[in-house]
Image (cartoon, one colour):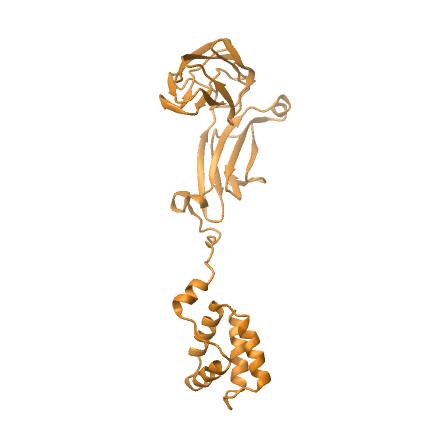
Amino acid sequence: MKKLAILIIVILAATACSTSLSPEQQQAVEATVGAMTDADLAELDEAIEDAAPELSSALSQLEEQAGIEPVPQAQAAEAAPAASPAAAPSGERQPAAAVPPEQRPRIVYFFASVPSQSGIEAGIAFFLEYTTDNANRVEIFGNVMENPQEGNFPIYGDSPSNQWVLWAANDFAWVEQNLIVSHDSDAGTTLSNINVNTNTITLSLRDPQLQDGDVVNIDLNGVRVLDRYPTSGRHVSFPLTLQSRPNTLIITAQNQGVSGPMVAELSYSNVVGGSPVQMTSALGTGQTQSMTIYAP
């Protein structure tokens, strides 16, 4: 709008010598001013005040003739549109923790998976899989990923490292996550009992280590609720209907995968007692582990 303010000043300045507007000139200025917002008028007043003293005096008189009323600063501030958050210049992104939550990129998943037989024959040792949220650029050790939301990156057998870093960013901030790729192993964990506050809960299941083809069965109170399910590095959720008594859940390693053993992560909703996220101990094919869920 500065260009508009300057244009009006030029119109006014052109007649400043006579300090009088012809009817046609006054009509033209009034039409232009009538379309201006309070913020525009305040900007015009500021431009007039910044003019040379002699011209400013004449312009102020002509402004009055044209019916332009000064806009109070407070009113002008209210009329001015709120500035949207400016994106940080390239190379000046901040760590995610330094910006508001709504501006932060987030790494949802970052894990390794075993390739198919054709991939193995092509020399791929494993894939690095990722899922992000609110990111428009993703890199794995400096390699820019084509899809910043979700994808995978092949690592060939001659790679000297099993430690990798995923870097995700948007115009405001960046975040990174380390991953050490290794075969499934016993993390020293086991399932434990929980209390929930409802009879219908959600169970989310995933492979928390190397995705290598683990297959599981889950039985609840003697009824098969998940049969021969191949686990993934990403959560898959399904409902569980509980009875108003202790409920026994049993997970069986139907297949321990390529590298073995089988390790699964189970996440429960509505937990009021015990751990809502648990990991089984290492299970070989055919082995089981159980826990009790107490419902109201």
